[in-house]
Length: 153
Image (cartoon, rainbow, N blue to C red; front, top):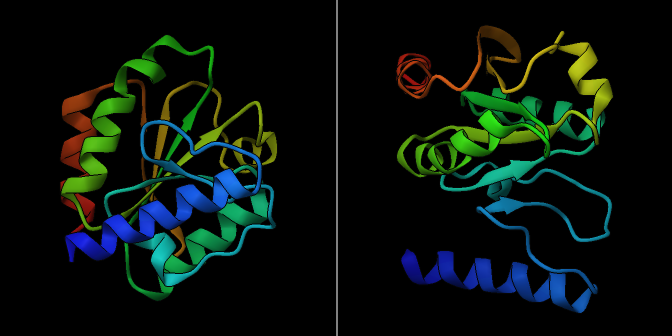
């Protein structure tokens, strides 16, 4: 299984290079200059996915809902110090829990931030069955882990 995962990651990185862009840091996956579509592979654990449009985000949420998977969305900003501080933990949690982890930059995707009423960063939304079931504002690492454990059951 590890070999297949490594091969998939290598192919994704190679496709980014061939498309003229580079892979994203911190395990964030994003399509490389191509329209985004969500597949079953996109919803695997161990990766933090980036969503740059409201339609892409809604597609990812719907796909996870069809699989009865928890989706955790981290609304963040490049200029946000607490967001940068909690990013490594968020990545670790994506490897620990069987859920879909998404990062949304509020400056790149203001429509998503507006739709979900995000006014402070970081804000974490917990979505199950396509519905928001919980919310955490701020970089509270212990509470973030508690909520993920609670809702991923």
